[in-house]
Amino acid sequence: MKYSYLTKQDLYLNLSVTYILDNIKLFILVLFIHTNMKKLKIAISLDKSLLAQIDSKVDGSIIRSRSQAIEFFLRKGLKETAIDTAVLLIKGEHQPILLREFKKESLIKKQIEFFYNNNIKILYIVTQHTSNINTLLLEIEGMPINIKIIEKEAKGNADALLALKNTLKNSFIVMSGDTYNNFNLIRMIKKHLELDRLSTIGLMSIDKPSKYGNVILDGDLIIDFKEKPKIATSNIVNAGIYIFKPEVFELFDNVHSLERDLFPKLAKIKQLVGFFTHGEYVHFT
Image 1 (cartoon, rainbow, N blue to C red):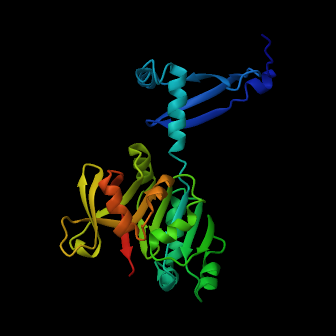
Image 2 (image 1 turned 120 degrees about the horizontal axis):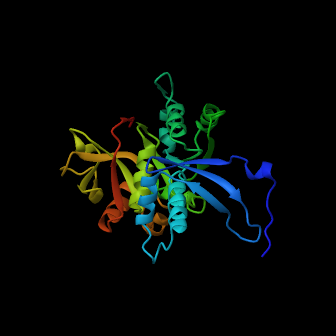
Image 3 (image 1 turned 90 degrees about the horizontal axis):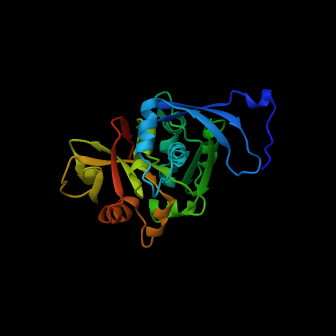
């Protein structure tokens, strides 16, 4: 078997990849490449306690070796940064809310700032065509993330979201356009990926819950969801921000409203996780 080695200068390129796994950094130095293999051979320097944790995951069946365990957890960790797309749902009649001054800027600019600060790179705004569209386009011009406006006549916000069914291939964020949220969205994303359910929704506790979607929790799972009930069963309510897996679209038959139709269905099959945002929330309608 023949090997082809890199030059000494290339070999010691000091290629270091820093990756957080359980808050411990892995430093990877590429030593040599076997040109006839699909995978690269590497040598890894690890903290002793971290190595012990990795070895404890080798079960001989699903994870059969130390190298397989390391690859598995690297892939899992990298996946945690994979949610970079958000959707803002706004009725055409509510577009002036996006242009309203809020904290010395327009609301839409503050919403975009929130997404940008939480590593969102693509934002879809799903709405209807109105006389405000051109003003909205001018307002979002030059923003630091890629923004696309999708115009769709819809019977409800779930129907509007359905316009992106063939576009959204990975987990994505959805936020109601008439709300402002400011909290650690990255933590919510992490919880969504760890619990691996179809949807995670932002929650908060308030004194007058009947004006909001009302939630009953069993641990992290939402086991009952009622949209604006006459009599609230708890003080825990919907904060208007959600994370979905793309597979959720399979449940969209006869679903027009996320809150009235989809969330009760997800709660029933134990596919709805709750996350307390513990941040700033403003509802404008």
